Image (cartoon, rainbow, N blue to C red; front, side, top):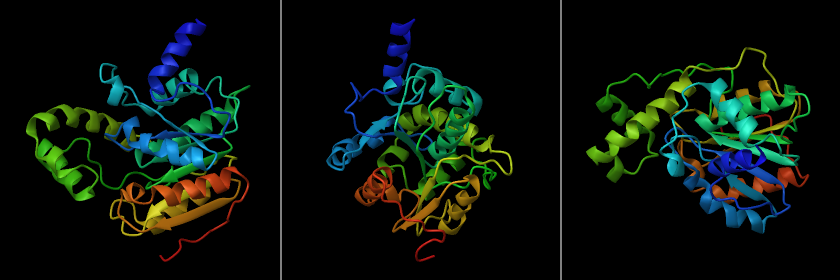
Length: 263
């Protein structure tokens, strides 16, 4: 049973071979994304005495043969049982867009599970607050309309969007992720007890920066908001700034910002 759990965890963490002894940050991707996005974060993070751990969701990246999960409950249960059940911390969870909602739901579950170790901090990026209903559902759109929406978001390279064969493969993955994202929201008044740091893009048309401030209502602990230049995928260019902030928070140098800078 122990070996089975270890093998299962390895599928979720394909780029992690062991612990460095540094504070860990488990990183959850956006809809359609994979663990590969956060691979470039691992070395710069170690320079800041933080270990970034990219998480691979079923049906994505290195796990293309695994069934996709379209329900939040199943996703949270799998992450808690197969990845975080043995984590003793200190660790944090970071999620971008869809990943932020998953990160919050996982944090909630770990805080209420007897004997579980919850994260010391939650980092959410490019996401509406946990209780917010996604204002523009996309998962049921026809292929052409969904592709047009993805183009407008700016996160998918144009050469991929123009590749019909590749998009036939990718769209079911994106639809599954959007189904999970759009059919779940936390109950009103839901809160976690760990601090939350929220990141936003100043020019994000998908999730306006001022709405990201609503994450403050989902914690009983300190909240910080950092607004970066860029659109919904600002974290591509703002990686180093975000890592610096993450490291500062995890090493005990928080800054309490209750209002968006420059918004």
